[in-house]
Image 1 (cartoon, one colour):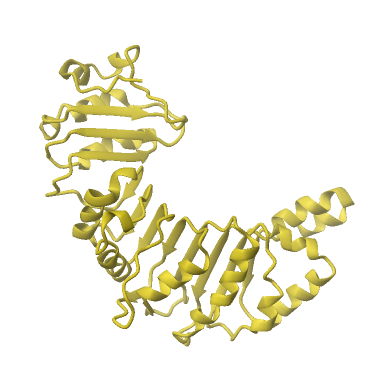
Image 2 (tube, one colour):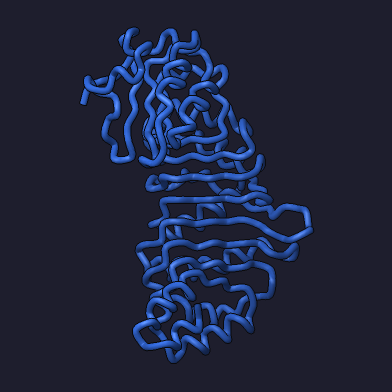
Amino acid sequence: IGTYGLVCTKWVPRSRFHLFSHVRVMAIHRLSTLLDFIANRPSILFYIRHLQVDMGALVIDQGLLERMHHLPNLTSIRLRVVSTWVLPSEPESLFPHLRAWSSHSPSISHLHLDRFILGVPGQFECRDSLILAMLSCVPSVTSLTVGRDIKIFKDATTPVVPLPLQLSELTVVGLDVSHALFSSFIAHPPSSMPHLTFLDLDPPCAVEASAQTYLKRAGHSLRSIRAISLQGTNLTDFAFSCFQPQIPDILSCLPSADWNSITVYIQHSAGRIPWSAIDAELAHERFQHLRKFAVFDFHSHKFLTERTRSLLPAADARGILDLTV
């Protein structure tokens, strides 16, 4: 792609858009080389949308990093532990930079923390208060991902602070991560919990009790949820988002319950909806108490109306289709 920018001046913006949309800060000499290149081309900073900062490879020169503060179109920041020699204080040294990036770019919506050291097992221990402090540095973040091999433990020296209310997407990978985050997460009243629309937990059922507690207390805004077992739950209303072929499979995983409503949000219009398979699942005894079933398309318009009720004849005969527009 780099050679395309040499073809003619009209190709320069497009080639830089692809070349510099993702930037990885991984060592002093490479960062210095990049900044020297940008010095005479300051407009390149406008093309950087995704920034990854490696912690532990080599100590990052704070002065050099300050020269990268003006990133007006930055949308995501990834902090990755790449060495077994990362000190607990190293992430904190990035706080001033996180605040600076946030002040220059109000469009930062995603924060990602993980560890990746090829061929070296282990974990990076992290206080739960550190995660919350990172989020407070970038108040525009609405999506948080905490990856595998990040072991989170409760910080007894500081009061538990809830996750920011603006958070709408949460992905946690790893048993230690899930347990620590959710155990403190649900310790607050519903008014202090963010109303997530997307929740992704791995491994499955790692924090089943805590996750179900969240669902009952503040889960009414959820549109997509993955890797939570609902066995033994007292839930009566359930909504999920998926692709068309997945609907029967998800319904088959739901337990018997006194279901009041089940709502499906289809993610896009591609592919056929397996109506007959859906009708067969709804006819199962697990859903004998189901009172209302609705399907929305990706524009939040209802699929099932008076004109389309024949798509699910068995469910229609039971009177459980929500046909209101």
